[in-house]
Structure formats: structure tokens, C-alpha cells
Picture 1 (cartoon, rainbow, N blue to C red):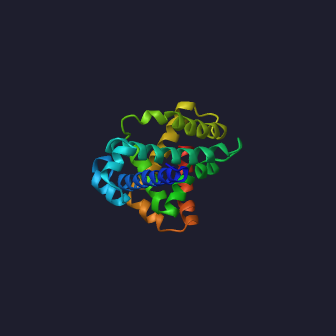
Picture 2 (picture 1 turned 30 degrees about the vertical axis):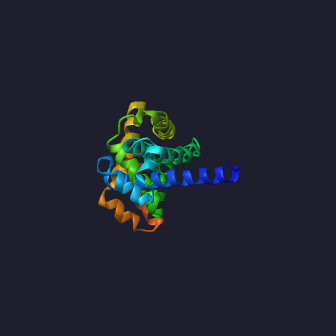
Picture 3 (picture 1 turned 90 degrees about the vertical axis):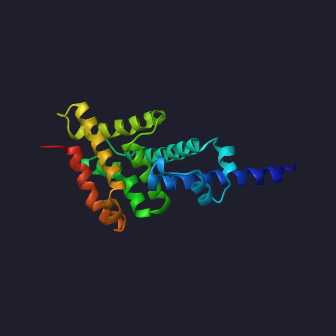
Length: 207
């Protein structure tokens, strides 16, 4: 087989794989893993059933790959934001960095919002095997706690970790609740003005 034909076939295969992941991600965001069917995914992706077996092996493996992709994309974005914070960052700056991937997804809509909703579903009801990304969850949490400890030196670490987990849970709920759809219809600046003080308040805790 000529090299250029091999390259074209490889590119077509990668497009099919990407289309299957995108279709699975959108349906997962709408219904969760129990509500997704192989037929719907392949129809939405413009692919045949055999393509799922070829690229992923099974429907479950495809859904797992889509979930892992969504989580990695979200966590990588959050880690980048948190890594960029100076040691002197305020609670409001921490809240903005922590929530920025969520706010960006609300503003962008489409696939970005599908990713964030999938992340939210997984955060609320983790699938079997999600522990493979535990290191990235821990990295994001550790970076948030670093800034919190500088702002709240009298608060012990377990309490700071608890507040970070509560803030993450609140963002997960927001992505799936009706208020998330309401915020998605608002300008990005208005979303920031509404959301950042709430997340900062969760980090601050009771005075």
C-alpha cells in the first residue's frame, strides 16, 4: 500500500475515533452512562457499530474513554489556573482560578459545556476505575490548599481540604442544575460577578 494511502486511512480512522468520543461525550452529559446506547452514539457520530469495536472494544470502553478525556481536559485546565497563582493570591483570586474552567464552559456552550457536565456527573457519581485520575484530583486540591493556607493560617489542613471538596461539589451541582443553564445564558462577566464571591465564601468558611 502506498504511504499516502496509509496516511489517509490513519487520518480517517482518527476522525472516526474522535467523532465517536464527541458523540459519547454529548450523550453522557445529557443522560449519564446508564442512558447511553450504542446505536445513538454511532448515529450521532456518522459511524457504524463495527467502528466502536475496532477503536474501543465495547460501548463501556468508549464511555470510559470519553469520561477520562473529559476529566483530564477539565483537571488540566484547573491545574494550569491554580499553578499560575502567586503565593500571595487572595481568596477571590483562588476562587476565580478554581472556577474558571467551569465559567469558560458556561460561556462557550456546545462541546465545552458537554465536557463540564460530564465532569460534574462523574464527580457526583464516580464510575468504577475513576481512581486512575486520582493524582490529578490531588494535584488540583493541593494547589488550592496551598493558597488557602496562606490566607487562613489558623485553619488546619483537613478543614481546608474539606472546603476545597465542598467548593468542587458546588461547581459540579451548578453544571447540572437549572441555575447552570440560566448562567449559561448570561454574559461571561456577569457569570464571574455572580459565581466568584460564592466560591470564595465557601473557601472562607465561617468567620
